[in-house]
Image 1 (cartoon, helix red, strand yellow):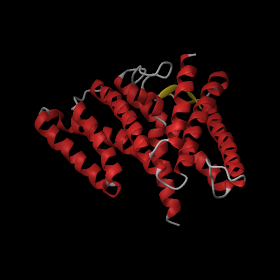
Image 2: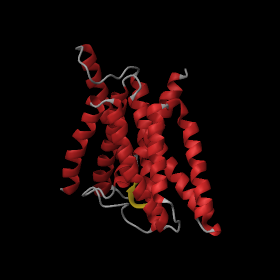
Image 3: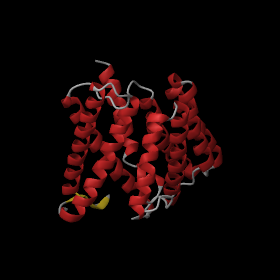
Amino acid sequence: MARILTAAVLIPLVILLLFRAPFWVVTLATAAVAILACWEYLGLADGSGADTPRWLVLIAVAALFAINFFRPEMLMAGFSALAFLLFVVIAFRSPLERVLLDTSASVFGLLYIGFALVTIPLIWAQEHGPSLLLLLFCVVWSGDIAALYVGRSMGRRKLAPKLSPGKTWEGSMASVGGSLIVTVLLVLLGQWMVRHNLMGLSYEGSWTHWLVLAVVLNIAAQIGDLVESALKRGAKVKDSGSLLPGHGGVLDRIDALLLAAPVLWYAQLVQQSF
């Protein structure tokens, strides 16, 4: 029940942000989520033996979103500069035998959380960006729900027992199916809205494009879930935090997006190149 109630609050809020909020609000909201998730990630890193400069890493994540907001063309240069800054500070801060470990954990946090989530405002700013992001979220949400219920009731063959013992191949296949079903419904709704000159969803292109994209995003989301499980098992914890009732921490809730969002961003870049 706690899981359902939390989702009932968060999902309408996300949709409202996508279609009604200006770019600066979307950027600010995403940055806030990134900072919370990064704090939890750094706890996992420290629990695995590192000693990261948490506040400096969080400032670097916030700076990455600021760079993307004011000078998006400088995003890669800004990321590189922030990564080198973390390295220099840690080189003087940490014991010599831990400089490599602390730097690796800190810079990876900037990449894994900051750079991954900064693609969300980048996608939003594109033509029909809110529609693309709604597709992304619905693919992740529906896949997660289908995997949960089918995996629990019918799952027999373990998918990746070392990383996440509860996940099964049956749940994984159901996840793909759930994502395809919700994609079909969204594209049909978008086409209906376009035919009736209604503002909102828009999904141009062939059915093949959207269905293949849904499968790719679902696979990326499932891998994102598994790799976050690897981080938690390495740190010997069940959840990354307890901020969201029924869902664990913020990182637990967005782990799938941390891979799926960049995949969508790169898919759009590839499509625009042809």
